[in-house]
Length: 322
Length: 255
Image (cartoon, rainbow over the protein chains, first blue to last red):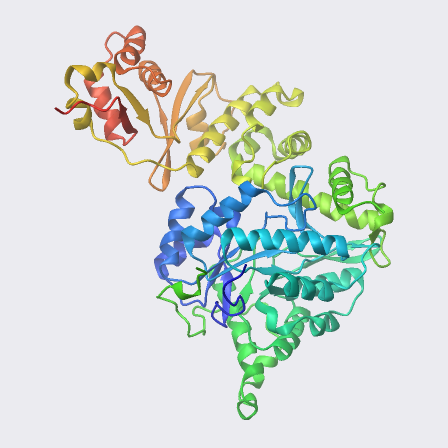
């Protein structure tokens, strides 16, 4: 059972997804950044990347983001993989651990993609059982991220926000709101992204993700692909603004996985997220001064130094579950 | 209505068979064709796994031509998909696949280069053990001849008919097809880097015999059989000096 509040152990500012090509630069220059998030599966072996992350961990707050647990698998989660996730958590003592509302292992095959599940009672029971098993094994609550989807299911009996809210109620987990995923799914499946966010249990949201998508032309019309390979789009920034107005300021991650840009580009995106959140959540009298942050960002925006004040030189051991 | 387990099994099958007829009625995609939309997942699976294989086997990909590699990777993924989410472990069987794959039989160098690249990948993802010093062996006195040495767990050997190390160092950038030359390589991790070292015939025999668990004396005999000038003391110093020895069994009697 969860023993700590999952909602705010990360600093309420922007962080970036840490990928291997940026590790040496971060170790060498130690730029000011709110926090860093890594994919758990990249650190499940010994190797140079693990030792580099151990050194980085001494200077930055870390979040662990799993992509392979397959919480939506009807056949349950792989106990060996869960043990590896626990090993990573024990090793790096992250401030936060998160996974996806998805499945990625079918008939014993790892698909290396996150697939959607129907939103019905059977799936709800399965996901909750798998989340509870995970939280029990790693002895801490986790955040569950909404997926970007290209298809839905005829058998679904509830909307995704309702499904997520029920997961939170039954398991005590928190939510990771991926704003880009909401936008991509809404465009692909034809629902209202703003209404989706409005329907989520705001207090359960412990982290936000932002990323870029690509639009592909198909015989059926355009489809948005969540490729994590470009700047956050103006539409997604607008949705992020609405989300922040609704739920308040949350730790916000800039995710970028393909066509990885220079580190300063990611820091620029993180800076923009911080400026926007500051402008939205500032007291009314100071909002006028921050009005410029409400303007859409330029795709060429970069920064040498992030503006977030948080530079966690000390670890956050107090957030660890017993 | 099928159970979630059945639905997921059908979706997995659809990804690998390439058609979504069995699940089409289960899917919704707004005004789009659900089957066509479902193909996005199939493309994601195959493209991301192909990208992983290309990242692990970059020189093999270059030697074989990028289009051929994409074809071979696609076939490999279809026949031997990953069985666990830790992708760093995926690709161990790719060298063997290339050796048997009819389309690459005309270029046996591909499978051998893939073996070297997998050895590098293994070294990068295998832990290292603290090394022991030669002094520990010297203290065993005459018993040392029967000692068995444990070597770094990430140490791998490659035997090839091609100048693999040269090609690997050049990232496969070659003007002409390489001439055959017998090559013996050892690959291991040293701190944060990987070492790819060309070994002489007797040294290769010596190191491999140690990894097979032979006592020092027997391992040295294998080396001497290939070169009676094998300098055993110097070889031992080199082996320990490289940090490759992680244990001595049985433990030397220090009394």
